[in-house]
Image 1 (cartoon, rainbow, N blue to C red):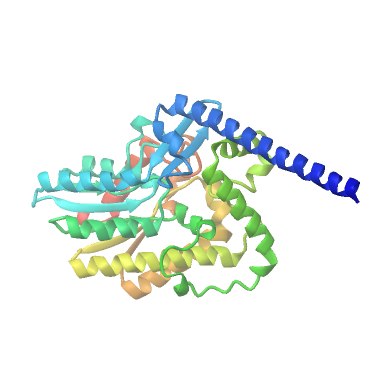
Image 2 (cartoon, rainbow, N blue to C red):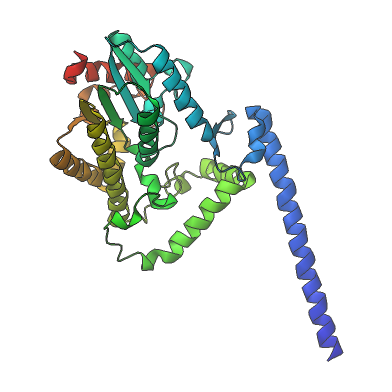
Length: 353
């Protein structure tokens, strides 16, 4: 009996010390990883990753040491500065345009000289003043918050609002709905069957958003194994996702966009344009029968209910040739492409002529 008890105690001690060693190993590995990232980014906020949820780190290319650190709290600071500049340079004779979207609207992703389509639009027509509220990685919900904030802080109402959300909208499938989740009347009959899969994915995202060593390790695995990329792209586009998941994301986009349109009408915005920005043909093909078909259904619903205008630049033939000079990846545009978007907007939007 004593031998059995002694064995149990010995085994428990081994388990305990093994856990302590594992925790210590994870701690040291995490510190070393964060130090490495800090040496690359030269930003002390690296050590706040996981603790400060506003701090996001994007491993664009580890081998080339292309690592971006973003503090989402700086979005508010950026918005406030834009508002300050707008009030200082408030020229009543200029057409005021507010642009909303993700990194494909913010611009400069394909290099410092890549510019943005909003900047190029102002360059093409000096009578247009554009304020670019686009931010990396955000979806329509965040833009809705930015819009509401600016209505209160801006003295001048914009003449035109351009809403260019699309690519980041599927993030809601994994990150969850932050606004009116009960309004998403989407049938998820097969959710139970995939419950384990989503639990694993949720654990994966939790680890990735809190531990830099895990994020780096995952990035290395993905980069070295192209087969895994299909399961873990930057937007987590997994082949196990079903129609209901993409419909869920599109419905969320629809709800946020309708709210933005309603607010815009109340404050007296003259025109509200929905814009579908271009992407590489390969990406369009990949997403056509997945998110995009639901996105276009939501666009139809929005137009029918709100009577706003929609411009689909993704189907413009100009972007289907010489893609290598227009995109640096699947969706981000070079200077040439941003300038082309600006020219097309000036051509199609009556207020810009």
